Length: 136
Image 1 (tube, one colour):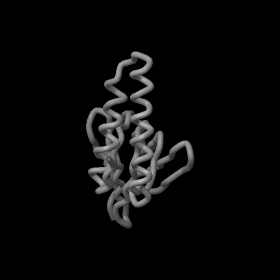
Image 2: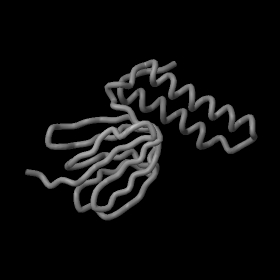
Image 3: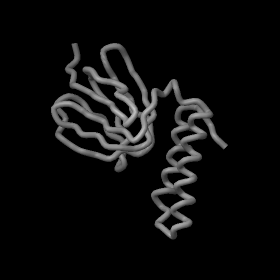
């Protein structure tokens, strides 16, 4: 039996997963990382991407739009928004991309720094490409 760690994935709307896992691939803002039991403690921010959870019963994937991950004795992911990958349809992804585009327009209208907002739009489109759901 593989070594496991406690994993919790929560968003403001609900708790999506809580249980023992063998590894979690995290879309970190500074690069992807894989958390495993006995990993050094770390806190990282998330970028939009796919969170892949490996457990005794296989792999479960979630689309996250951002948030934080805290790895200590276990792993807690606090996602801005998280959805099971299977629930992400063209309509859902289009809504997420439209929200990101609206945020970009707001930043532009307020003469703010557009880099982060533009990256969010690009990241959301890239998530769609990765999971095979395209938006126009």
